[in-house]
Length: 430
Image (cartoon, one colour):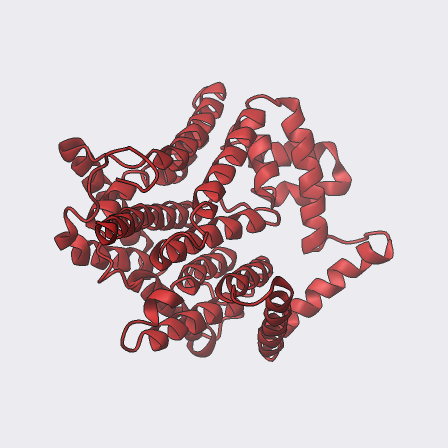
């Protein structure tokens, strides 16, 4: 029974003997997401199917808050499906629906599996630590051995850098749990160091901006014994220190200099004469608004954005370079253009609900285990929200799978930890 409610639910940890197996499969999924993508995705799908079988057979009942996790995903997928149907089920739209957005939907059953297998004695965040370490190792091989300009693990560098950051965000929330374990602090800082290494070496500037926000939030959370002003000062000093260290990396220095160069004309009010990374984004956002307004209810369909951009560029010869792009570099504009207001509202609803369910359990009235998991989920969603401004994280395959898997595992463990801590409190009172 959840404290403060009268709702009976299936006890967490009912099949905790399978937790080591579940953790092993999870490690494989995260560690191979860039090494062997097909194998990682197959393991994720099979694990989700196993979770679905478990749900059908045992029908576990989760707390009512679970609806704020699952239903927003279902609604978002339904809005995308409607957009594809409105586009007469085009081949490109159906391909994106089944190969990408379905990865988000099938993550829902995993919540029950992580909830039922939860064992706080062995919940050592191993999968995300090993995932971060693997990402860091891949980045070092790319830069030092393969002499690549940016680390990407053979994939898109932006996706690589952001996924590394996501894993690092989750590891960042595990300090209270790991400090109680032998060598726990070593595992903790190893995961952070290698995760940040991968993120920096990817050259993904959007991820660097997100990193500033999540580090600030984490420090404010961990140093809650100090006043807010002191926490902000400490967080700012640490961020400046990390930034100074990062600038010693030639790749980082080069990317920062380039960023300053492309921002300067906008700050100085100068006329843009060439297409750079910033101007591409600004013009794409404008184009996305015009494309979306042509069919503002259901959009042009998830598979038609590239064709729409080519048509837009043909109508506006001065913006011809936009015709080579395949997304709008902004998740909200991308969703509006492809799925209309229906899709945009569903996306905002998903983000809002997921932020709420994790924020709710950050308070000091909950156990350290619950609060740590809530922080992990909160940082995950915040990272996706901020990254949605310059990029489209709810579009790519790896983006969607890592969000579904991470959020489902964190949410399932949080609900289980909440119930177990509540049961412990009741036993103490009795």
